[in-house]
Amino acid sequence: MAIGAGGAAAVARWRRKRERPSAVPAKATEAAAQRTGPQVSREAGAYRVGEVLLFMGEEYWLAGELALVREGTPALTLFVAPERAQDRWLAAPRQGDVLYALVADAPLADLGWPGVEVPSAGGTLRRVEEGACTIVPSGEVPEGWSGAGRYAVFRAMETVAVVVEQGSNRLALKGKTVPRRMVERMG
Image (cartoon, rainbow, N blue to C red):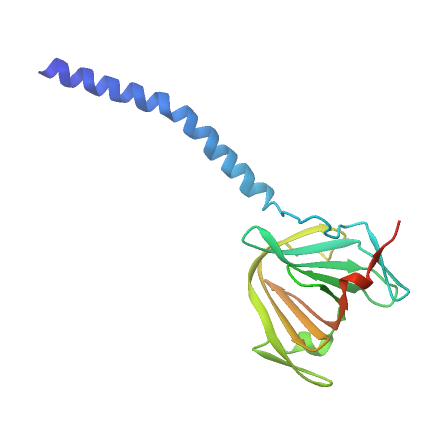
């Protein structure tokens, strides 16, 4: 009986050793995926860093982007379009047939994290979307934007505001909606 128990224990150890090498590469692959950050899946026709867009005679060179990722896909993608006086931003929501043409708004930034409404010159903007996200930067974007954060989108008719926060960084933008069909790709 002791010989049978010893043999069974030896077989169990042999099986564990044999199974261990296949488990280690899976863990190593998972760790490598976490180090490189989330992969941002894009839909066909999505805008990309480096493109130049034309809207109402204004050119927007998309120099960098902040993809606000939820559940593996960008909920909102913010593109910075540098300009001499101040940076302009274009935001592409996950769904819908509009883009948001935005600029930095200091009074909105001074509010702190907004609640369900934000004041605007013509009235009040109401929150239409908010949540936690992973911020994935690419191209030429301000330093420090990477990792876990949160965002909120506010709208009233064609006026829109977007607030993004990550740690001590806050980006508060306000502007107008732009129909996607009126935006042309240059080149």
